[in-house]
Structure formats: C-alpha cells, structure tokens
Amino acid sequence: MSGLETYKRIKKIRPSQKAILASGHSESEDVLKALSIGAGAFVKKPYTILDMGIAVKEELNR
Image 1 (tube, helix red, strand yellow):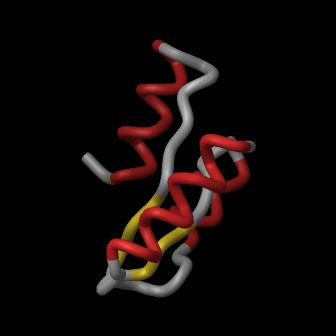
Image 2 (cartoon, one colour):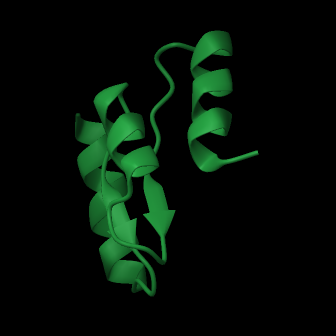
C-alpha cells in the first residue's frame, strides 16, 4: 500500500488527522495529491532531526 493510500484510509477513520510526508524522491504526483487532501509538510530524505522537528512544529501549529 502506498503512502497516499495509507493517508486516505487514515483520513476516513479520523478526518482531522495531521500528517507529515517523508520520501527519498522529489515531490511526486502522490505527494502532491496527499498535500492537496490535507497532509502537512513534505520532508525529503535524507533529512536531519532539525528538518523533521521544524516540520512537526509547523504541522502542530497549523
């Protein structure tokens, strides 16, 4: 199951669920779709703990 499909299923159970996307690839079509349905930041791998911390803080404040 892809990350996009996982996120869609989670949204059906809990529509207000926050999410951060992480991938080793550039912003793919699936990433853009997930962002358009409510996922938060996109963090490209490899990322640092600081990168992820910033993304988490931004998503929690959104």
